[in-house]
Image (tube, rainbow, N blue to C red; front, side, top):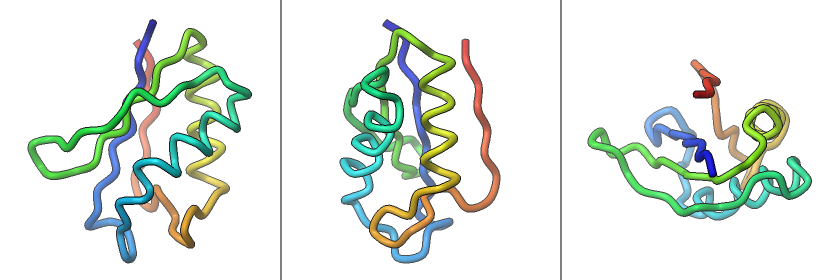
Length: 89
């Protein structure tokens, strides 16, 4: 099953909160009507939070991520302010 990765840079967030690592996947799973499921998280070499989500419908997953990051403010924070990139493959 394909996996998508969502990378969040804590320096780009106002008052970064580790609760985003569980809340954001839940919002995306809901927005995708279950087409995406949480696969955990890790931190990359630059200390950015990377959230992994599995899906068998990549296009629907990317759309759900886009909708959530552009319209939701979990914990009063905008998860993606600044540059965004959506890529499949």
